[in-house]
Image (cartoon, rainbow, N blue to C red; front, top):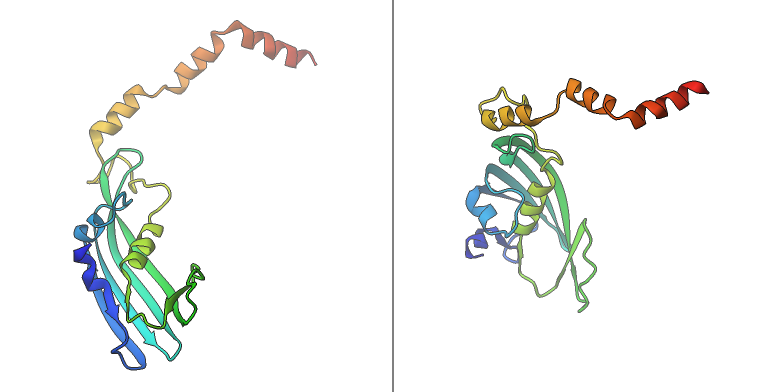
Length: 181
């Protein structure tokens, strides 16, 4: 996790107001997170930190592309990512800092920095589509044509499915019962 040191922002030395931070995300970033959905990508993170007396407001703009594995042909292909998120960080004197929610992070008053790497990682992973498919299966430079040909060869055609359903006499008997009524 030493390579994630650049994502630690010491906010105690910053003046009240808005501050801009830029990060470049690549394969090395994703390698720091075990079991990551995303293994590679090229993204640009523009983060605005608005320091106020009692809180910090973090605005994230993440743009670029990640490489996803196609659920159909199993090849890697680029997926565009465009994320805009806001995170609020409040300060508290309370020893019990378990009040964190999705929108609000609570830090102790003696904290002097915040690590935004986990937030960036989560925002990128939430942008991953539920189903990953190449745009035009079989016709793009990313598609694995051998896998698609093999799938087509092994898949049953409509004629074969029809022959299998007609071959069973029990189905014919059931069809006759329905027609009698």
